[in-house]
Image (cartoon, rainbow, N blue to C red; front, side):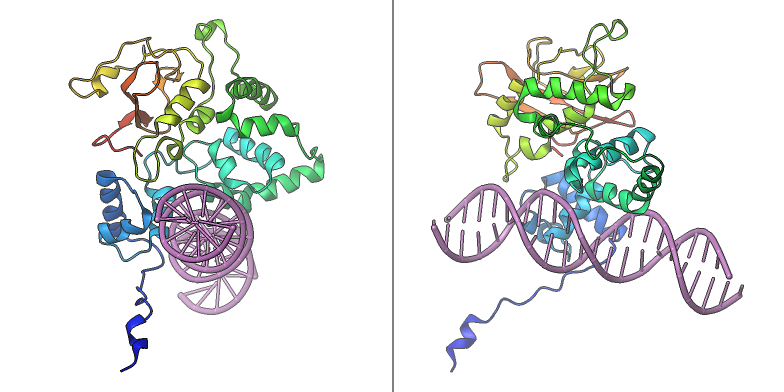
Length: 289
DNA sequence: AAAGGCTCCAACCGCATTGGC
DNA sequence: GGCCAATGCGGTTGGAGCCTT
């Protein structure tokens, strides 16, 4: 008898490839909504899918994840992509971070199929300067979660260069409130920062956020109590370092999540920040997406 | 109507990085 | 420090649908 037979290579699992069926989408969505993704390699097993974890992750990120914005890009989004691509090159994930609801894949495809040609045409007419930002300014923008002062100042300079659509200067029309764009807000609150690989809250990052957001706290436009579970409390105005960013009547968030900070001196307890997409708040089973 | 070319986009692949042991 | 698995990222591919001839 050969001992070799004892260390046979693992049987290769035949994974399904190609387009996802509505049934597969449904299974993946239901599973993640109920349990969160946790470790991606176990998702297809637990969800009863014959896909590999990588494929599930991609499908979730690019298609199923709540908050995905589909359809045509707005002129503002196009400008943002062109500007950032001019400064950053093919850093699609970094560009995508500045466009809430858009995925790197979508932006990349849009660039290759449309914007690249448009830019080439424009540059024939009037060549653009290679970089519109100084390296240091762009670096600050990219690294904005790390340095709050840099975030605000660099963003404002960024926005001014960008044009009126991203004006952040406090004005009488907004009661002196800083209208920081959701793009940076979403970046600060990126899900990967909020949760560790086990899907548990990362309290250190909560502190990190409280350091980096220095904005006005305003719950006027949101009936937060509606989103708190029974027994939870919050004191409006007491979370001095957390802002609910408002845009007109709407509270704008890119992700739904729960902040529970039991380690810092500031009181942050069971404060739900909710996502508003098409006027529907998204939150289910306290699972964060 | 049919064939061939083109465009767009979802998904795959491979490499780099990260994190745990 | 090395190994390995998981994850993230960017380049590339494949195919569906549209357009042109």
